Amino acid sequence: MYIQATRLRKGMLIRMSGNLLRLLDVTHLTPGKGHGFVQCRLRNLRTRTLTDHKFRSEDQVERAALDARRMQYLYADGDTYNFMDTETFDQVALTAETLGEATDYLLPEAEITVEMFEGEPVGIALPITVDLTVEETTPAIKGATASAQLKPARLETGLVVQVPPFIASGDTVRVNTETGEYQSRV
Image (cartoon, helix red, strand yellow):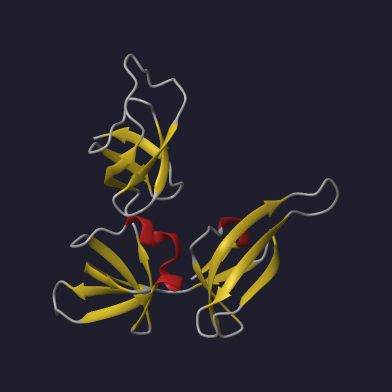
């Protein structure tokens, strides 16, 4: 399936010159003179090398066709994260480098969609939001409102997010997995 370069988004997988590439960073630029373009930072999933590529706005890019399989996250073993297919009970392992920032949102026994390309796991698709418990933050301030200053809070996965002052240790908060920002108390 081909898509226009302006529709490229961070995290997508594309095929280019016979290689499978993950988009790590996408910037749309429109200079004052001439045509716009899309600057991308890409990681080759086979060789693990990083490259930068500039697409013209009108270029057509081949998006990799992925199979999505529902799996359960089991545990982490060092830099390896293990998942189990909920239908066949087959297990697959993905490295922290492959998962990237997604490791900040993984909880044991969570149902996750694992993206497969030609039978090999290449990444995961996270839900838009995840509910995580606050492990550590400064004490709540009496009379604090949502519009007050934000404070850092360390969540159960180790992720640190900025939260309103009324959030206390032990509270459960909803975090946006795309931006890494606090959304609400649950």
